[in-house]
Length: 354
Ligand code: 2U9
Image 1: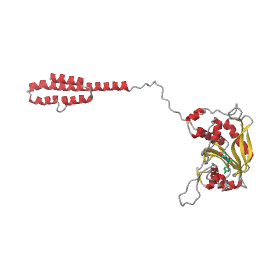
Image 2: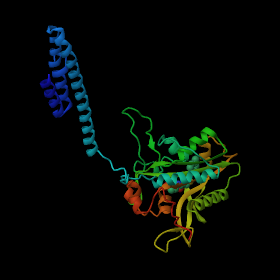
Image 3: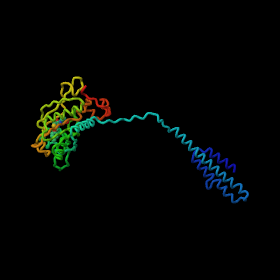
Image 4: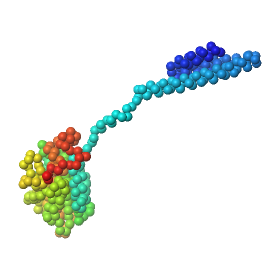
């Protein structure tokens, strides 16, 4: 019995893992283990022998079970110590830098425009980017022979073979949204329409997709004076400095009379400073909505009149944030934006004022 005890206690003591311990448990105290076999022999003993051997075998079994449990706990502790040595974490280390995203300047300016015009009572309207010929051209009094309608200038979609309906166009301005709004809500109306527009044009100063914000105000007695006030208020709020405007007579099919609008600026120092100096920079087109266009939108031109204007968001974003190159937008590359000092978290630097 003593041999058995020292044999198993030694083996348990030197077991290197749980699997070895389990083998030892089966060998020693399992159903067919050595101690169980010895217990079966108790029946063959005399009562005197059994009285001595029985308790001794039970004590041995308890001792081996206790040694197995203690060793198992020891192995688990050792394994945990090993893990703690290899898997430790220095919670005092500084965190890893995450690349920070920023709002795109075009999106930021889009939001700035909607906020400034909202303060002046203009709601925002949006519409489809793929338009019918009617909404993009005819309703806007753009005649069939107008160069804008040529395939060279406008992207057309293809109809299926045998489908003779006129093709759709990628809208060339957001003006169709105004026609749709006029049809839907009638007059009076005060809306701005920001959105993506498409023209088949790509060179150093043009991209095939760009962003516009157009405005429309229709009421009983809206005039060019209201247009000038609205635009000066807008530019003053947008550039954060008083900005004068200059109107030059122009021609657009959808407005009569029409005017191109320049803003006051100073070119002398190498950068454009808006709201200073004696120079002028063209930034938008505008005019009084043509009676035929009002009619196309379902509004009676004998009763209502109004102004409309259109400008490029990309262009006014470049002016405000001093971005000299269209590629800054086109590549949507943070390196460009950082290079030109733009960050959504920064208060924008106004290129104008003092
Ligand atoms: C309706 C009636 C009239 C919108 C107008 C312009 C003049 C204009 C250009 C400026 C730079 C487009 O982004 S740009 O290339 N826009 O010159 N847009 S008046 O006139 C409208 C619009 C809708 C119903």
